[in-house]
Length: 389
Ligand SMILES: NC(=O)c1ccc[n+]([C@@H]2O[C@H](COP(=O)([O-])OP(=O)(O)OC[C@H]3O[C@@H](n4cnc5c(N)ncnc54)[C@H](O)[C@@H]3O)[C@@H](O)[C@H]2O)c1
Image: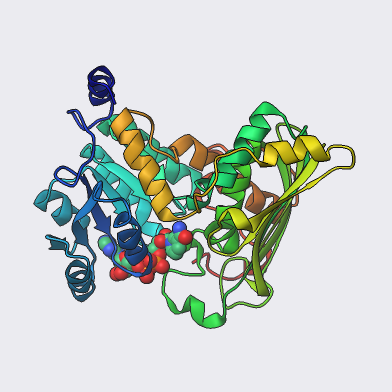
């Protein structure tokens, strides 16, 4: 980076000084919530060659935060986000807490001018996400959402092919999250209810595939859906099927299930000149993708398939590196709030369509809709007589 561009970055990156992250002055990360996914954050941050360091962590469970700080050599531990922010200087907090806390904790950090990277889902509702947007504006810091599958090489490759049109128009797609979660998965108190998790597999699992699909094919315009609670001891759905029409005219079939013993995360894109498929479970490499040309288009497709980028797997480290790059260069932190909102709005649209029996258009679910304040909206059909919690 030249001196001029470094100075330009310093003026816009919110850190107030020229900022190329080094082991001497790394990106200073605070971890909020030191349960399951926090270990994955620590592991993946350690792959950034010293550009990032966890300098503090908090959890309401003091024993858990102690275990985390000793395992990952973190110099400061606390039992609340306020204590963490008071006790150590941070550039960014990673919210690894249960979904029901993301909005409240994001607002606390953003209002103090500290960037936030939230685990998915970024908030429980569109209303909460709009509150986060207000706090972003008030504090001048940025809110980003974890969506690690946007960051593998082939997803980047495909976004570029959609932009240059080499594969022709996208016509149809499949976006399946067919996962399996036994009843015991719901032993954690925040799982399987609207108030703490915000929804079932549509919100908690399929969000990965739907967000990746939208990041490749672009915004949606209309959805019609069915939701069911087939087998799990939950207040939410355990299955949704949706037909989503995109702004570019492509029609996508989406399934979100936690009832599927032969698990797969499957994305399929049928363009005029080729089918592109991605099959994996929780993370992909280049080998997880394949392409099939339409008859007569073999050469054009083979040539395009040989182009880069290649080699980058989809994982948290890839997104953390992209965030460090963005901070150094003064660019918005990926995945920005407006992109996360489009995906969250699709999820709200799936619930609204499934629970009301109608078609839902993008932009329709404003503050006057019950699905703006809660994904449960007017209530799941199976929940008549049950509490929304
Ligand atoms: N991106 C992914 O692939 C992925 C994978 C798994 C989980 N997640 C997401 O990560 C988040 C956490 O999931 P998990 O499985 O690690 O859950 P978890 O229950 O194992 O961990 C959450 C931790 O937060 C702590 N906590 C609770 N209240 C707190 C508070 N007020 N302040 C600080 N800490 C608090 C809990 O004590 C617990 O240690 C969820 O939003 C989940 O959806 C993302």
